[in-house]
Image 1 (cartoon, helix red, strand yellow):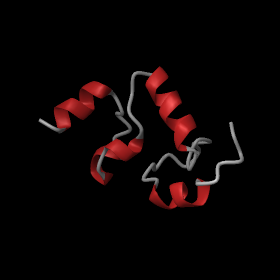
Image 2: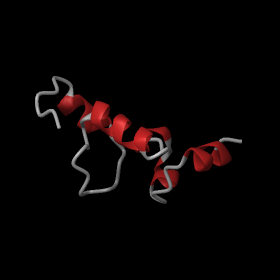
Image 3: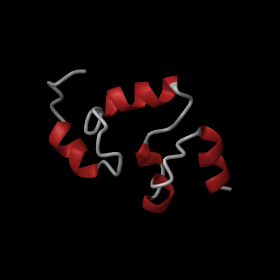
Length: 66
């Protein structure tokens, strides 16, 4: 994981991920690549209540936005 992200502090302030053990928190590129490989979306695609379910599936995103 890249520890040299010039936007890390700004990303961290905006990140709504509540998974405290996430090593990708604040590293948006790594987060997007990880969740895409899992057929998911990152936390920032969900509102606070939706994000807390940890169901980051594309299907859940579509269901919540219909």
